[in-house]
Length: 170
Image (cartoon, rainbow, N blue to C red; front, side):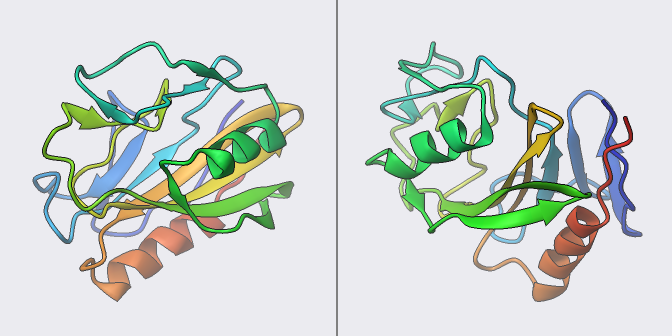
């Protein structure tokens, strides 16, 4: 399956990671950092009961089923995750759910703070993730735009425009 989107001027794709980031790439964890992560989940994703990991990857201990609802239900019922109420959404002609996750203000005791794995980790305190969980012909796809409370509104708008341009050619 492919993912097509229109990338805004001033953004670049990272070829070794499913990430679109501002060009030149800034230091992660700064209050205005942002990025767009594409397609980051699969049928064997699991949640970490404690997202504050002592090592960069640990085997998740909460299994998650393969559907969009399995993933969204697991994330929204996790007691340590700050999640908005999920909403139905359409992206690229496919249906799914949308939610926002806000990382904790203090991650100083964590090697990294990673709610699910395989997956990525918060880029700094109060990192915000807008998460689209989409069913593309039975395959669960995650699209995540990540930013901080201090991120400029124009950067957040560019992230949203890139997400809204996504198509899934089969």
